Image (cartoon, rainbow, N blue to C red; front, side):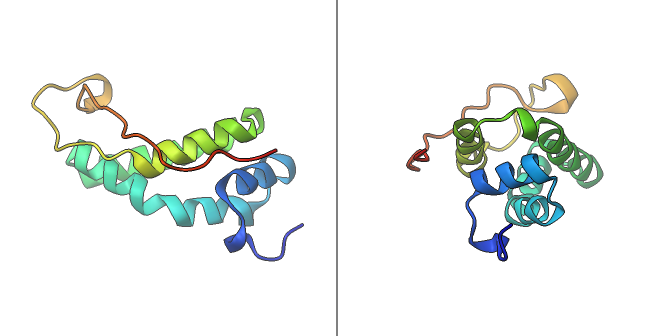
Amino acid sequence: MPDDYTKMDEADLLAEFAARRSEAAFAELVRRHLPMVLGVCRRVLEDDDAAQDVAQGVFLALARKAPALQREQAWAAGCTMSRYAPPAPSGRRGHAGFAVNRRPQPCNRTPPRN
């Protein structure tokens, strides 16, 4: 078991959490990504309480699905999370109040090597 989760990449943290249910590994993922996830939710929803609920739901879904994710999927999810920057909300809303027609930005990260 690693001593310092801050030195691990996202795919390794997710694998550690999935294999051992390591709270420290998952806490490190949350520490790294909560500000971005919460920021996106706040911009899209324009409601702080709703944004916090949705951000919490994102991490709950990640915790539930972690065992099923492969290393490449974890990399792709991390890449998408780090590069997705939605524009200001439009007047047209989709399911759960999210603005529709969001487009992810291209990712410049290198995929993991097995």
